[in-house]
Image (cartoon, rainbow, N blue to C red; front, side, top):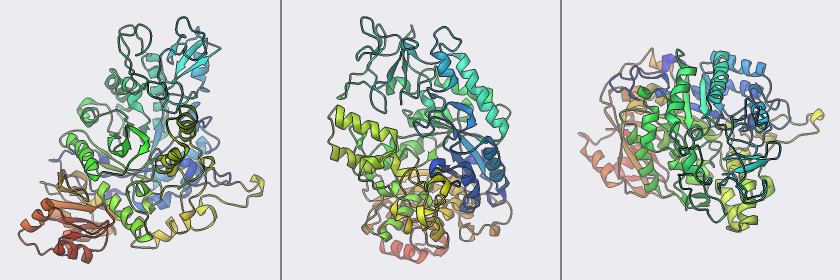
Length: 638
């Protein structure tokens, strides 16, 4: 994204509480899951050269930052989130030279590159962990090691230090015969948690981060970074350990208690993040730091992302993508209640009204496709309309939007029907635990849950065109014995693919391209205040954006084909956004209708419509009739 297309954000707004405003306040980030993005060598796994080959596509879309899911050397137990060498590229994806080529190509096109950083845990094959298995080594205290419970046989059930369960199923403790102790892993046994209480661990992490920054990357997305500080008592004991002064939670139906409350937002988190900022980013410019933040409230997000506290630029909160879960587990999915989504999103927006910043996302590599989750696949028309509606709803909020690969063309869930189609460690482990071991869910119910909420729904190959394998990989490569994609391509690629949509001005791709350009060019979208209206309406999500300060554009706005008609927002003070999130025609709700009626002249004209999921004339007719068509969204200047 070139700077001449951007608007100068009004300094009086002070976006995240800082002045001057940060570059990412009106930027858009695109997440790439390398394994599924583009394969160039025909082995069925996406690679770095594949990403480089698609940089022109990403530049055309208009995004500013590329976030790469892990490409470091890894045993791939959890698709790269188990890292065995932070300073090398896994051969599956290429080489360090390929990474340098990608960085150069991205920077030539005005794109920044952010790498996924996984430092709550490493792979059990990392040299640090292997050294830590020797209790007499300098690395002995780099992980969370504990002896078996007194009176129990080490390695036998019940000898674990406490009753914590892994988020991937089974115990959160694994016995290592070499050391004769258990190590903590919130996730897979092949992902042991690093002990951030140890200064040597932190120093090693910061050294590695500086190495990557010096190599030319533009920042980090930090995986489960809010779990690096654990709650321990005055003697360093974890809840549930014998003698610990902190009471553990009771065990659930599977026989395990949850480590989550004690491993999220721990007492030293702010200290660690401030230290990281000072040791890695002090004196650097143009970078981005975003943290994955399970367990963080909107209030805490305000503190951590307030630049006055020198921690992170923004966080990923998850309470808005957990609202359609019954009893707190995604394996009991329930239909979306729109008023609940409004309430949670409003909490996030209001918390950063004066300081701090928000990350805007509905999709990522750990979430199912929002289109299948909250939209409609009742027909091709409804699929396209609901994809646009969901996109508009998100992108018209205040914050930095994140687009996950394929979202911009309306990719859907995989709709797998057999367990053997899944590749995700979490899905396979949880089926085994919940269905075969604990018997707390039927096979039919669990398969339905996986089809709706499984992570593999978002990990099927990117759908580039209508050729074999959706253009994801070359085929008929004799040396590879006709390899196939590592996970099945969604069969709807014939109808849903980038090539067709790039030629269609009314496509989901074209709509995303417009939304991205709008954020670059219209300060009311990126920096305007946000206030919810019609909070109790079950069908329409509506809010008001307001910008009290005018601004001037940089350069000639005509150079940007995607900028809105005549740059209407430059003189705008208020904008009403309404999105019908149903398959039915519904009335415009009361508060919104009153705002429309209270306008000095209610004869709206074309340039008053900033965004619509249909067309401008349809939007004007809807406003006149006081209704919104199925999945119709309208953003109107008041």
